[in-house]
Image 1 (tube, one colour):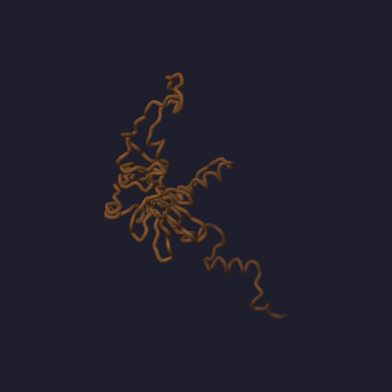
Image 2 (cartoon, helix red, strand yellow; image 1 turned 90 degrees about the vertical axis):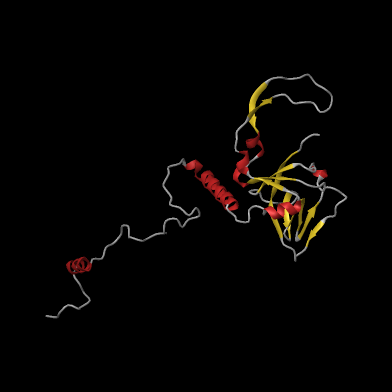
Length: 228
């Protein structure tokens, strides 16, 4: 009677072999998967139940928040004090404007042309911090020295509200550092041509060459102008 081939095993032999070797199938394996804290946020995550219709919106919100945090934590995110002094600018940090001060907002509009009957109905309150500042931690203030941006409504001594979380695009008024020297100008981008435009004909247009280093510190969102 012929003997079975060494490679032919009965079901009972296979089971016995697997059991004796200690091999297992399926289930969690120690050390498997991505290590904790390796994601975009660098910290452990948790499972949260959300409506299916809102999954996309929540993901987009988290992506925007992560992008904002990367801007805030950028070590080159704010101009150095010596750069500000050279440009005649003063920086005010966001931590100095944390207080809440809701003020009365009247529903009527004031006529800048012919006078109109007064409307004294106050229907809400407004907090200027919330009204003027979109990204608190990415916002700083600068005081202007000079008159190169008069046409944009920026006067000598005005306070500029600058947001680092907003993308600097063509036509935006920006705080720019050109070869380390700070200036406030309107950004012009036409193909490969980048220029910094003044809003005063007494000042020249600044053409940015390929050999120069241009860094945009932020976009000017509002101007605080005191009436004399």
